[in-house]
Figure 1 (cartoon, helix red, strand yellow):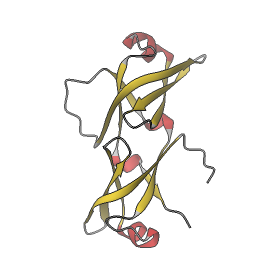
Figure 2 (cartoon, rainbow, N blue to C red):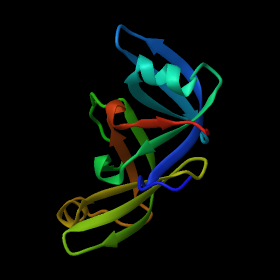
Figure 3 (cartoon, rainbow, N blue to C red):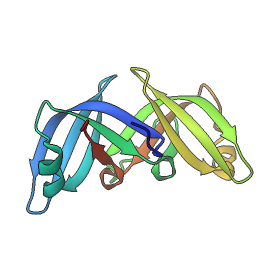
Length: 142
């Protein structure tokens, strides 16, 4: 599968909570991380999702927020994944930051160069990737 979303992580559905319109889906991905997605019940049915089934979590890099280290705050965002900065590519305005999670998965984020400089972010630093459950698109093999 070729897609434009920079982040594509394969996992297994560990929790599936359905509501009146939407469902909350938790995927266990390598390294012991959990990614939470909120999708419509219609999408759950269309994708054939159930506990134990495989699915991909897709997240566009501009939707990922980066914090240096392990934040001492609680966030309303459901996805808070800690790791180590593997690469920082500075552009004119934006930077491409890659955070390696335990288990080897990479989360890419597009943030401003000003943010990179303001945090003093560099390769080898501990960092946290944050993104909302509603920013996660789920996909399964056809």
